[in-house]
Length: 438
Image (tube, rainbow, N blue to C red; front, side):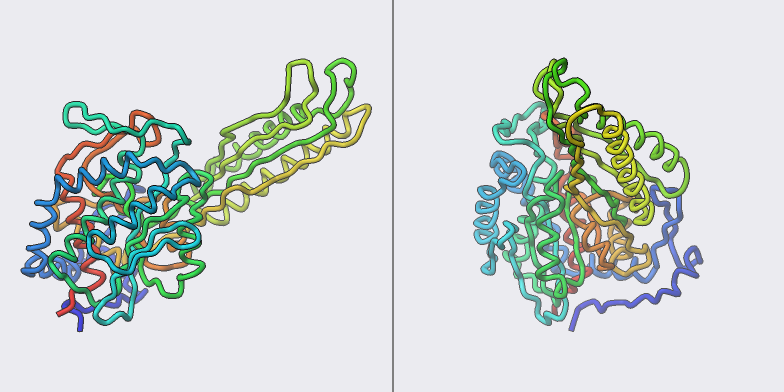
């Protein structure tokens, strides 16, 4: 039996949000968040357990080692689609801290399994192995006035380090849970990695996963329970090319690209003025060979995001129509040669969704934050949790503690501002959901 039983909250609870038995708070959109007093009591009781108190002290005493692990992992490069070296070392570290069921799956995810006493449910806690930085980027950690500087020092080396500290804590103190816990280092969270690691995890193991936590970054007051969906495309216009004078009149891919951008901007800018928050961006443009050559190819990369799956599909349709309109006009204008073609290749598809604030998993996380003296906020972001949130699996993304800045830049930094508290908070959320075994 679990030391703490699960509390099933019916959907009808939505109707009583804001009553006197709840503690109100606000989300990042100004909406009211409420924490059921029953969950506050559950967390307070959990915090008084002697095993939990022992674990909290262990995590604090391990703080120096936690930071050293963060430095060590940061200095193992993990460029997009090249996470193998870091993954191998991370698997070794899981084993060194006591896990004996550790594997690297066919996609490259590191998975360490810790069976529960009952084993009826499985909770995944994850962090991502990859960084946004290309091969050859210097990743040596520099210490300036107690602040750590290095590309990737926080995103997501902090998350990876938190998982290792949790493993060491549970193994050293022999803390057993009712539910299974899988510690996972995922690949492909960033950019055009398109969440490939966590997508593969749920494609192969989704029916076995009952809850999901992603530890990403440092902010230990936010709780991401809403997934920001996105569609990303590489659009390429192609033609015969030729000399700018001698082949003049041939259909020009660059001109078609310019038309496409204009038509997309004109219609998308009107669309996003109302309805669910939606954005669009053309981030990269390329192609051509020289100033006096008609290009044989020009391309652009487009990012579209929305809080709403329906709105995302609508702005996607606006983009598709703009590309086709530009293609038709460019071909109508030419005076010689073959037609242009356009290839619209989806390079990213991140699903959206939302886990309601009254779901027990979210309630427990809110109660833990309040136990630590924080005023938690529920927010929306694009993280590994997008996949499980879109599937309706209780899920969240939380930070691993400390303070940080400069994410995705060469001057990324992390400062150990009571960073151990972020680890303690993560541990409490995990234990509240997994249940201490008697």
